[in-house]
Image 1 (tube, helix red, strand yellow):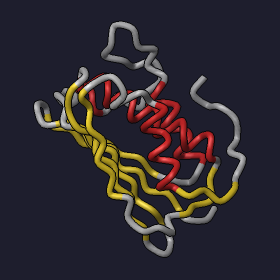
Image 2 (spheres, rainbow, N blue to C red):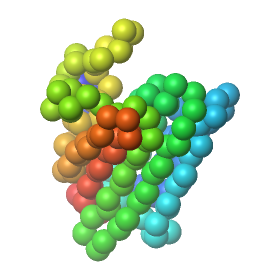
Image 3 (spheres, rainbow, N blue to C red):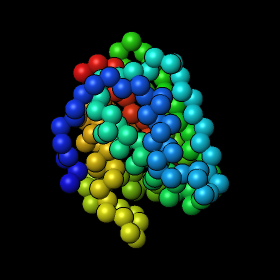
Length: 154
């Protein structure tokens, strides 16, 4: 399940993709979740599979929405250099317990009653297939930040 298909690469404009993924995740629609987006440079283009990248961000935004339980803020930012882009997705929710941080990308690991534990494993594998890196930081009671670094060209 978590492996998925190989990326179908083309040029992707990240700012529009991230905005669209937030809308598609359902966050902000019928709840009090605010979305703050520091889109960075207008030329934040990468070589990637747009469907897979959208899946990454929908997954991260959906997780943030669940953590926020209908009220809070999701913040996304994009920063670009000549070689790479760095994307951060943060929420001000309850955070991830310290003992769970090392396991969040493992298949079938979940802290939810109805979760499958595949969402972040899929995200991890998509990022790896794009020659990128993903990391997570969290402080209980303060929120969680996912940081993704992707090469501009594969």
